[in-house]
Image (cartoon, rainbow, N blue to C red):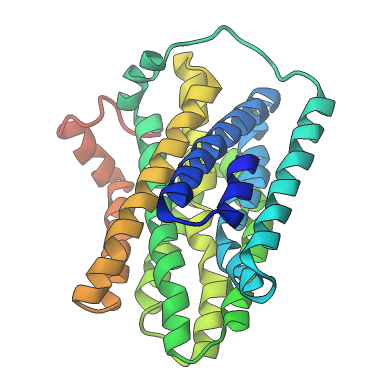
Length: 312
């Protein structure tokens, strides 16, 4: 991952950049799945939500820092910024070596996760993670463009995402603790409800100052959804005897699918219609998911055969 980041900062030509991005994605997926699995194995089950909340708050906050990195690169150059990021990766490698070995278990083959996909907790956690990925893809692509259309400069755009990342870093552990103490569906419903409102308002709010406030306060609604979702997948992996590394591989897969679909489609949809439409579709997806998490919605899922038992 660090090597690919360094190459990406200095390479020229689409083939080399595409190859570096692919390698970076593979390395990042391995680092994320391995790190979260290590953390989940070390945490007590009753405190797993709050523990993952700290880690995922950092991860999601890092994803939201993308526009800030872009603003910094526009000032000092792409090469130095990517070289610094690669240096951080080297420091993390040294830190991991100094920590000693992670908890080990018997290795499992990939096919072990196939039966887990029909488990209500795992399936629901993957869908919620995918939904968060969809939100990240739409927001990261279209929100900076909307701010720019309203006259905001690169520094203002970066500040909006930095503020949202800081708030999310604070909220994610609290959301994890809420899931541990009151049940994960409580925090999921809160995130989904807030996500509907934020997705509807982003393409409508003006001027740029008001939109900045909305982004700072509202974007954590999308990111905090990953915390209970990952905890649901982790708990399902425990229940089914699936290795935590494979479980968090599913989390990565769901998040990547959501971000990829949104990145490929939201810009094209906005260009073919207007910026309101992709955000309206995102709000609809959040609203439908929220409806399915009500008691009648969960009974409907059981009756349709998607789940063999209600989601708890």
